[in-house]
Image (cartoon, one colour):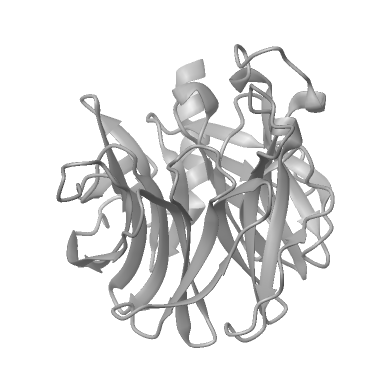
Length: 351
């Protein structure tokens, strides 16, 4: 058997246990598109979850824009039906830019984790991942929230998505190899790893393995009942995204090229479908796309209303055959014609 045939065979064997029939590509329509939050010039990086009968939506909001600013904060909205929303919490970290909030359900509590850039008086001229630090908040009822707390063991890491398994919390966290210092950002992407960190209390983390050792980036992942991790990972330097499988003890990932760039990826299981969502580029145009993963690769389902600065979707199952999806985009303008990024939700209807 030739090498290319072996690669295809391994690809099929890797993907087939989690995929539906090749003929089960659903028809999906987008309805009930709503702008949930649009105050200020930049609102971005969403996540969604159910918690104690309500849907929670988290995102970053900053009056000074997309880049690193200490004026940024994380806002949390809640809804019982996905239609009407109210703000239930907001937090920031002094001298740090807060962004990329993500939910993790753990021991009956809801955690929100955020990666933060240092931007105090000693802020370096070149942003340094080695000065990043994860923070979190937690709640047991969705009404009373803790003050932000440092995530021990995450200094020098860019905290991203998480998941819980076997009474432990795991998070994806990017870092430079050996926390290397470099004079500028040339060659930076190549030396970034995407690590897997583990915690028994949701506050203190230890290194537990890795997704990527080069060009590491944002990773969305899930555990199966045996502790195997399935993940979709962005790659630095605008390289193609990867589908990654990790078996315990999480030291030897198997990666498959997904054939396209995906920014802010989300891996979401719905019915028999394995959904992949995030920022795509087609004919030079940027948009947020939802596709389904098959043994032949990604099959496009639908594009969300979006362009420019966009992506970071969140999803929750809303009803039989229906998903609620959140994302951000800059495709709408102010009355004066200025660009702004806003938070959107919509329903995805599967047939």
